[in-house]
Length: 438
Image 1 (spheres, rainbow, N blue to C red):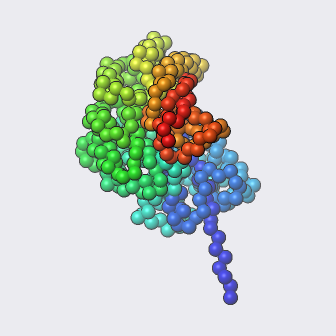
Image 2: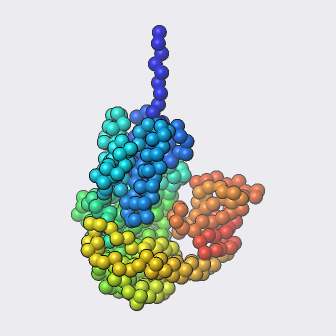
Image 3: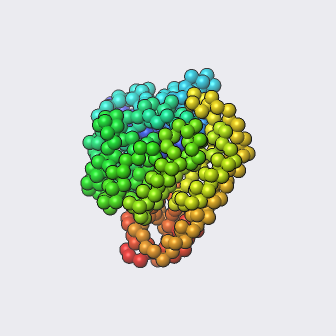
């Protein structure tokens, strides 16, 4: 009698780009694992039969990285190191026809909403009831929770609506259900993400409902921290600030991308806000939540940005003193409304301006961190690395913000647990601390 030789098909998922892509990859991986596939995330082994690359197409550097990664695995397929190669995500959504012509080694290209098609292509039965099933790729104690897809904002430089479509909120009950599923997997910290969190609810509830969602998520047993990423400054719902002030689980942390501050540049960017209103909002946030940490993103080198306009931005940033700041140079993206403008700021000048912003921010961050020495913070431990345990406060998100380094000697901590940590020293972007209470 013959016995059936059962062989699990192996899939390696590669994720490029932002945290929203991470969630998409995790959902794909979770469903494939449930359907009997052996799934790895960014495995360096050459034993995977199938590779799925989840691409980014946001700006030129991201597109370049995505194409280089596709070509790398296309070469691996030519050498029979893998049998199938699939590409999905933003780059594939935006440039599918061009990619099919240029890289024929790829077996199939999929868009940002084609999860069922990918699974069907892998000859598996797509099960709609599994939607939301995820295989977490982050450390077990934190996870990203995507509360909406797409964007209705008209920003002239941004290609995201071309790739992700119109704004679509996830119903509250589904998000609460997802939060409970994540808690069951060991998650204690939810990082809320979307193209614009403040827009949540306008499409399905006809009103901004982020504050109500935050309250419902705060009621989920096992959730200890909730962090907010990407809150658009225009039309900012003030009730979110009151929810943050009144609920201890909602971290005193706001990621609010300003992009620029000169009114003419803001108008050309179609940001729907002015310097005066932006400044008023920042002061209001800090007045209602005195110890809030504010992160922002800045864009330099937008078409026609003059030295005077840039200097106004630089001076404003020096006055406002954001806790965290990231800077991008303008990328001239076809099919955006800014594409009709001449990309007339040279790459050299763009880089010089970005360097000036970060050099100034480095000094600001150092000064702000120095003021933390001697203070004690509730800290979550993410991992151990070399001679240190690595942790974060409620004012820091993983991978992009401050880390607290705690010497491992004679200290046995556990990743995912919270500890009281006293800051003993500080650098520009890192803190040093010691456990005062286990």
